[in-house]
Amino acid sequence: MPALTSSYARLTAVHPALRVITGPARSGAGWTAAHDLAAGGAAVAGFVAREAGRLATEHGRPPRPEVAATLALHRYLWPACLLFTVPWFLRRRVPLLPVDAVSLHRASGTMTVRPRGIVCLPGDSAARLPGARVVPTQEALRGELRAALAEHVSPLLAAFRPMLRRGPHALWGMATDEVTEGLWYVATLLGEAEERRARADLAALLPGGTPPFAGAAGFHRPPRTGPDVPSVIPPAAEVDDREHRPACSRTRLTCCLFYTLSPDDSCSGCPRTCGPARNRRPAYAA
Image (cartoon, rainbow, N blue to C red; front, side):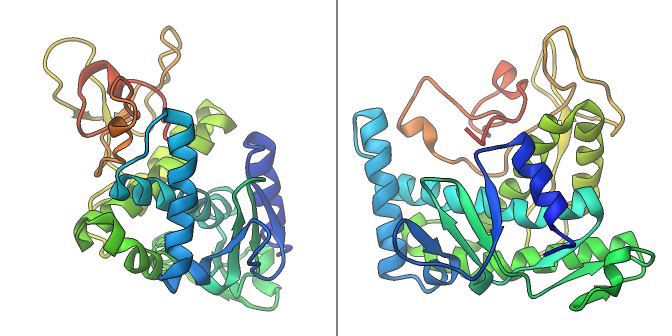
């Protein structure tokens, strides 16, 4: 954890709703252990039922079962993916966190982690720590990050799949969206330069053709007028301060189905929408 503490502290500083602490995975008293969710059955059913109750209270009507399951999985995956991507983005360190190493306290936004080790680059001071493994290049480190994420995410997708009513390709599209939009959102909180760097890093991490992840990070320039035909945007594009939005956007690979609860609202980059709805900063965290 000493190799990861500063990254998690910076995450909490800009996004106080999420706090990361060291310790074994916990269950009960508001805690949900990732390995319990990965086992499926009653743990997943209870997790989804609590999300369904929250959504019904907030929106005045119960969600469809697959909607509750989709948003419940998002409630876990969005912060869980940040446990991997933020240390990689800030310090080029990849934590190894299988499902038995993480738990979530939904009410407080606290997550526990007990890393199995880290992967880093040559010359990193963390390379001398017990449990550290060194890889020679940035591309090799990106491969380690994809592998670590897949190891954590795969059993969770399998456990939720019966309730989500989606096939494997769509499920891994969801995972690609969570990885991309979580880090992109946090990077916007870190400043414009970091937001631009995050887009470049994510484009290299998820260029497409990196199974099991489906699709690419896929940033593009949103149109200002005319047909909604995206064009490729260079990583160094500037933020449009006049409209307080980034000069790029992305279209999500999958729909979170939130529109079924609030038909007048849509997430930024929703594949069901076009035009102005794609032109906002990443807002899926909300």
